[in-house]
Length: 89
Image (cartoon, rainbow, N blue to C red; front, top):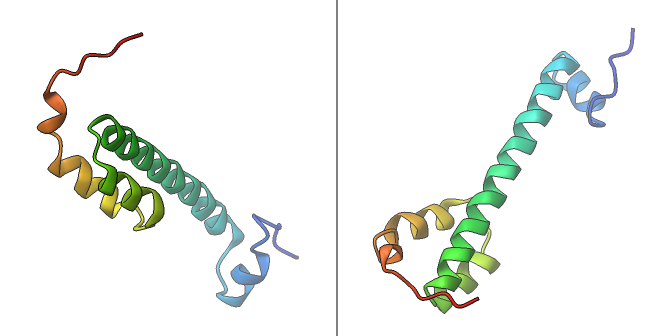
């Protein structure tokens, strides 16, 4: 019996002799990982732009480090963000 086509990875499941259900779990975890990376990148870019850190903004935007650069920026610049900024609407 052929295994179901989960995310188009049936050939990979057959190659490694792994049930296709595990690849479905991998797909869910993969999309959760991507959503987390986008959230981190968005937060880091927003904070860098608000704090006028142009070099950090462009580095975070251009360099894809799987969230490592985003986390470094967020952790190293968290105290500077506590300063009140006047926001005009």
